Image 1: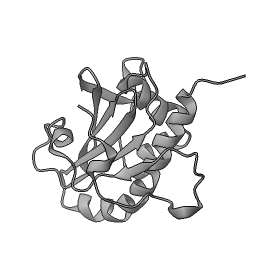
Image 2: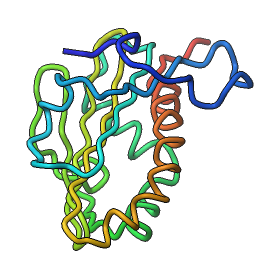
Image 3: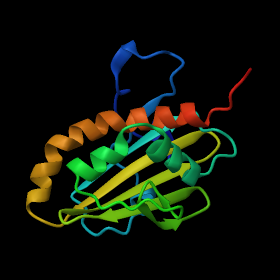
Length: 173
């Protein structure tokens, strides 16, 4: 079940200089229980979720995830270098992340590193798309490393959602 953007609090990232035609992305605070339930991580140290109005009919959660993480530029190098994630590109993964589980309107991606365990959940229906991040700190250093990076992550999540919308939007001639 998609959690509607109106159910969370938070300002539209980017402020008033964004185009009125850009899809609205809101950070969901607190993260709804329906989204939290999609990750079995016990005691995550970090959880966030963003929701965008403007889903595209007929696009699955997996297709949205592939658009965000494979088609929108720049994310793989960040994951590998800065986050130390061991990603292996294969057709049965999304940008190197294991497809751990999926439902009718959602997919959960997982990857581990020496520092932490990461889950990403993407939910999609014809009108909304949500992106949630769950991180369990597996080493004491992890929270100190993630704290400054989390600010950039929260700025990038709306960009990924909007970029995927641009990739998946049917082209008109």
